[in-house]
Length: 562
Image (tube, rainbow, N blue to C red; front, side):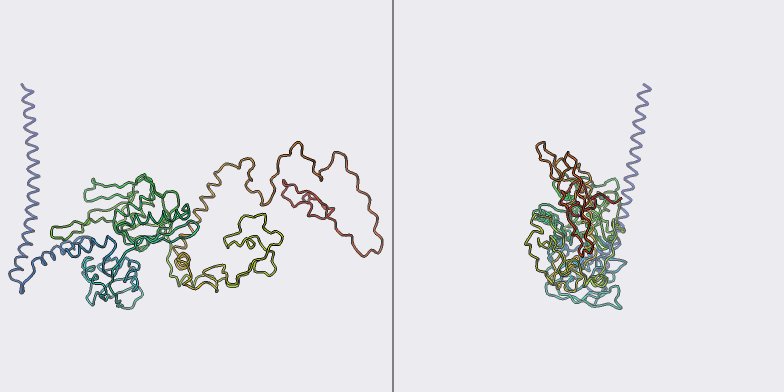
């Protein structure tokens, strides 16, 4: 009986405790709702007063849109309200074609700043550069502009001109740039053949199909060379774009591991994206170039491959945009671009306001600075420039400056003709006075000539491949029987095993003792001439590394001097 009573009181107390908690929670929620309702009442009251007593008729929709923009301006610069016309343009931007001048912008310290002009667009051709501060648009100050408002001002009909007041480091005052708007078509993947199996891909932005286009470019390169020795991925001045494209491109190079993780207000709700074990490009070295204008999706890709030890990052510390935005379509066709979380690299680092630190930092120089800094080699003469020099095998085989090919039986043979010399051939293609005109340079040569960071990345990539080849060669087993052992001099005959029925060599000492040489007659007095030096024939012993005795005068020993 007492036990039942105890259980009954326990249930009553538990129910009362739960009721108190629920009551407190309900009161808290009710209080929060009432406070929010009061604040909305304040907004509605102000709106009503403006509608009734403002000196002129007002557009209610315009006031509400303005109120929303003002509210979001209190948050970070990447959270914006998108009116219907701007939201429609936003959708077309991510598809790779839109109307405007072609720049990516942000707000830094309250100033509208260019992250990067998109290549081959009106802004790019007009000379707009990353880091430029836009202080005026069509004569109106940009102070207080949101990103959406600035973008709306810069977009317009094709052919219409826009005047932009630009201030740049080194300018004494604001300079006006007049740009003609055009249809901006973004080609996000640009491939250059670096020869000998190496490839370069410039990724200008992350738009729809960027991952597919990049995969297609690498596969075409592999089909051409049967293999890829190394790849340079250039993310400099890439402002970012679609998150899913950055994830898909990262997955092309990873077999396993984390690509990126995102975390919102609730830190327990963490979303992690992992690499898939699918067919990709995992067997060649990758170098990624970044700079201070590589942002957002560029940083996701660089961070994923850096932390998974899949790529070497070179360049300068990146922009540091580590926030994630979601775009919500609203009922009237407008949209809300809202920052919903931060993203983290596989090692758990948040790069918000800090960026990705490269493994190897590189300074950047203009093409003019590089040209002035180069040591000129005009008039350098080598052995092959000396008249009457001994013709080399490389000249007979007409090989290029990469080095002679393997020796062939015909090399140096009788009747070999001396090749004609090309007086215009250059030893250093970017330094000689008789170098090609600028228009004749290939895209590869022009990049290596004018872009110091690409030149350094290319050299590091080639050194990386050479070192890996040397490691593999050192780890391979010793040569099997019958193969040339490492270090054997070129053209040295490999000794064969002596067969039982092999005839004795003529220069081998016989079993019988050799006869003593006959004494020479004394020379007649007054002899004017010295006896000519006789060359005693002797077979070369392949086991010895010294010169054969047949090349020594008679009477000298073929042994080393004591």
